[in-house]
Image 1: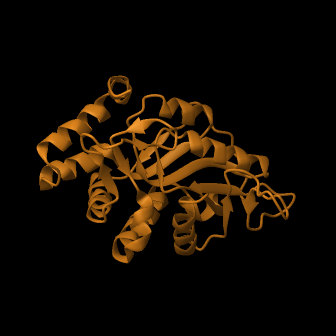
Image 2: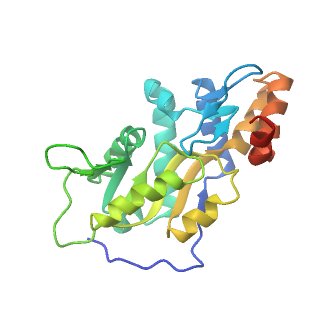
Length: 238
């Protein structure tokens, strides 16, 4: 197993993919209907954090599209191999319940790594386990947490806390999609000693929407208004 290393304050929190990868993944999410917009009069979406939003990216849909999911996972594997010493620095791939589990499984297969998954809460029966799979006793394996997406990173910290309590070492998260619009997210992740590796963001999706004229101008303007200032949008929309 790898040796545990303490993270320093200078460690980079964000590891974005290159622009070509970001565009390809944005196109995959748009073409599979993962990007959704609540038009005027429709109820806004509720994010994992409990906050409201007129837009939503549902990466769970991607699992039903073999060609696009294969592309995204191939690009994810290549990105991680460029930004992490995956071969020697990662012992386990961990999926977050529930949306992160299929992504973790595909990535573990591609990287030939053992996999576990972490529940939001301990199971209420049997072993009362929060971590499923096998972890070696008396060792500190280094884990990469995999999720489908991240908004402000709060739920990722909860998963990381559970993994650390189980005796693992974790400093890195991978998500195909990262909102990258909440100013406090980097501070949250930094304080939790976590770096996030991701393939595409809302800025990349907007670039594709504008380039390919996929949304009506009014919808695009509404999305931009929210993304520029989510808190102001929420104040105006209750």
